[in-house]
Length: 175
Length: 295
Image (cartoon, rainbow over all chains, first blue to last red; front, top):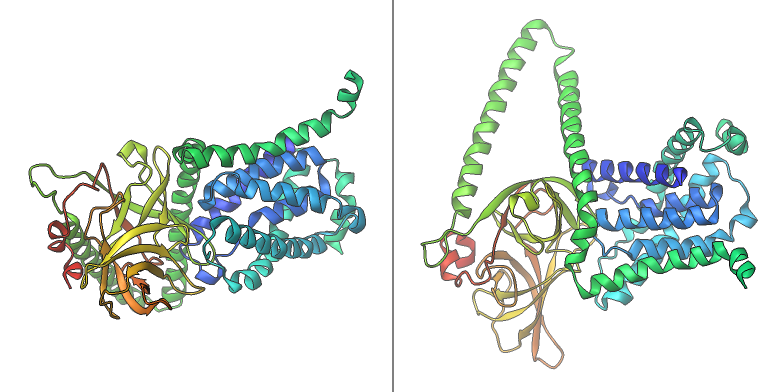
C-alpha cells in the first residue's frame, strides 16, 4: 500500500508540475503521457494487486487532471496491466535505460489505443495529432528516465524495497 | 467451498477492483455533476501546487533574464540598463493596466432589464492540460467564488469555454476548441444557426459549425456568436470567424471551419459568468459590448 501511495503521489507531483510548465513550454513539448511510464515501472517491480491499485489511483488522477471522465485512463491502465503483465515473463528485469525505452514503446501503443477508444466512444472525430504519436513517446523516454530514477531512489529511501531488489536495476544505471 | 474462496481471494479482489472504473463511468454518464464531487480535492491541491510552480518559474526566468542581459556589463551600462528595464517594465505595466481596464469595461455588460447586474468572477489561468494543444485550462477561482460546473468562461475577445469541474479555490475549463465541446452558435450576417464543435488541428485551435441551413448565405470572414439556445451562454457572445464553408453533397446543410477570436494559447485572464445567463436577453444586449459581434 505504501508503494502504491508513493507512486501515486510522485505521479501527482509530476503531472501538476508539467501542467504548470505547459504555460511556458513550446506547445509541441506539451505531450507528456504519464500512465505508460507508471505502468512500465509497476509491471516491472510491483505485485499484480499493487499494479491494479496503482492503475486505479493514478488512472483517476490522470483523468481528473487531464479533464477526462473519471474512469477512462483507469480502465485503459487496467487493460494494459493485464495484457502487458504477461510480457514481463519474456523481458525479465530491465535496466533503467532499457526500461525508459520500454516505457516509450508502451507509451506509443497506449496513445494509439487511447485515440482509437476515444474515436469509437465519442462517435465523432477527436483531436488526433501525429505530432503526439512521434514526439510524445520520445519525450516519455526522457521524462521516464528521470521519473524512474526519482521513484527508485524514493522507494529505497523509504525502505519500501530491499536494496537487493534494485541490485540489477541499479547496476543497469551504472552500466 | 470456503477454502476455494480463500485460495482465489486475490483474483476476486482484482476482479472487484477492475469493476470500479466501469461503475464510475456509468455513474458519470447519468449525472455529470458527480465528476466535480470526485475531482475537487485533486483540482484544489493541483491548483495550489501549480500556482506555486508558476511563481517559481517566473522567478527563475526573471533571474535568468537578469543574468544573461545584465551580469557581464560595466557598472555604468548596468545602471543605464537597469533604468531602461525599469522604465520598460513600468511601461508594460501601464499598458497592461490600460488593457486590463479596457477589458473589464468591455466585459462589464448588464442584463437586459438593467436593474440587476449578473455576477461574474475574474480569474487567472494557472495551468494548461492537453497535448500538444491545450484542451483544458485551470483557473484560480472555484466554488468559494461562486463558480459552478458549466459556467461560461469568456476572455476579452469572446468565448473561451465552459467549466468542467470545480474545487473550492480552483476550477477546470474545457476549451471550446476541444472536440468534446459542443455549443449552438449563430452566424451573425445570416442569423443561421448550427452546432459548433471543437476541431483543433496539430498546430492551431479551430472549430467547426455543422447543420447550418443550406439556403443560408455563409461567407468567409463572417463572425459567429453564441445563439443562447440550449446553452448556458447568453446570446451574442463572439466565438470566431469563418475560415471556409462548404455545402453537403445534397445541398441541404452547410458546414464551416471557424477560427476562434480568443488566442487560446495565450489567454491568461478570463471572466467566469456566474448564475443563469442563458435567459439574459438577445444579441442586442451584447453587441454593444463586443463590437466584433455586430460586424
